[in-house]
Length: 346
Image 1 (tube, rainbow, N blue to C red):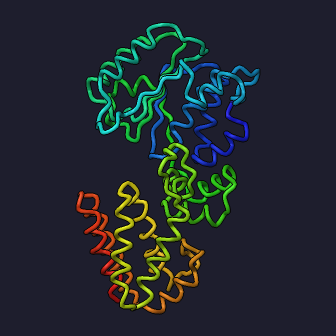
Image 2: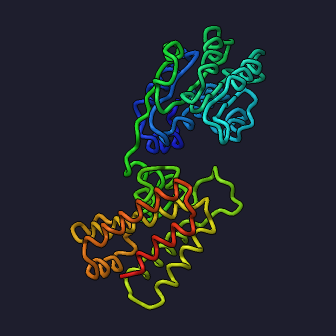
């Protein structure tokens, strides 16, 4: 069952203790449903729980919990287990197609290679087109022996009622900032203040928080941005623009725009950092203890005395417009030029 330390941290990370208890009962009773439907908001641990569940069902240890050291557990952890099948939404595609589901049918038409219980995980199952759903329904009506399905979804309604009726539903709730922060501290041994800043900046988005802490292991290491250093650099640049009326401000604004536009894939993480800086400036006058970027407390104190409150609101409005323009594929360089020039003119 999910009782080891790793699962304890996982339980905190996903804020789903009730869900874990429900899955433990299923395993204890040795009655694995043909299909489970994990649904809830993004980044609530649905995929991670599915793999932990598969490990528990197939662990070679004597106790009913993943030992994480037996061949089965290790293969699942490394994605090398032949009987743990995962289907995802293809890159740059909006729907899971019938061909992907038919491929599953072929893979499970024979006995499992080595698993006690073969798992088929369909990520974002609510993105299956109607043809794919009908193909899956046929498989669920006559599931192969020793095979179970786990479907993950953000929303249930896009799925056919006939599919939903064949699944045991498991709801995943959104973890609080505090729960995510404590998990990052405990699991990754991160300084509490750094964890606090990352989680609040990411607005409880675990994946983004891990990115901001350089802990997102799912991303390619090549060309990876050191976001802890990047965050400090961006904040210092912003402070420099809005705390002085130097004649070189316009040049600084254009240089900042140029540097950020050279990494278009990272632009929205940079916008997230700037957004939190402006948010901190807005609330500093009334609740300084609630700012996120605590390591820049003194600088924000000086700036809050330098500008009228309405100025901060104006900058936030400008940033919101900038983000809209970027998401509508406007020129990154020109859009950032426009925003930073406004910041530089005091």
